[in-house]
Amino acid sequence: MIPNSSSLLKTFFARILDSPSILIKVYILLLEAYRISGQEEIPNS
Image (tube, rainbow, N blue to C red; front, side, top):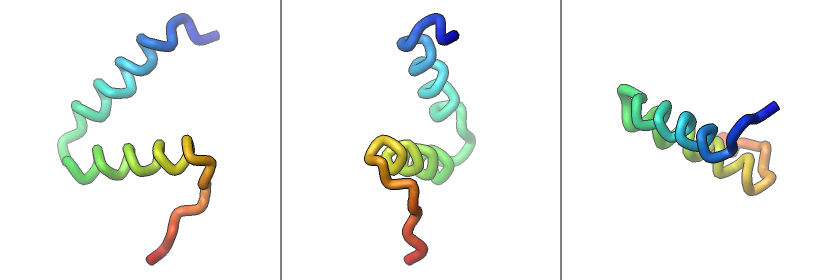
C-alpha cells in the first residue's frame, strides 16, 4: 500500500514546514510524539 516510507516522511515534514503557524507545527509534533510514545491520552492541564 505504502510505496516508499521515506517519501511519506518527506510529505509529512513538508506539510509541517508548510504550516502557516509555528503553533500548528508544535501541536502536530506533540501529537506525533504522544502517538509514538504510545500515550493516546492528551493531558488537560
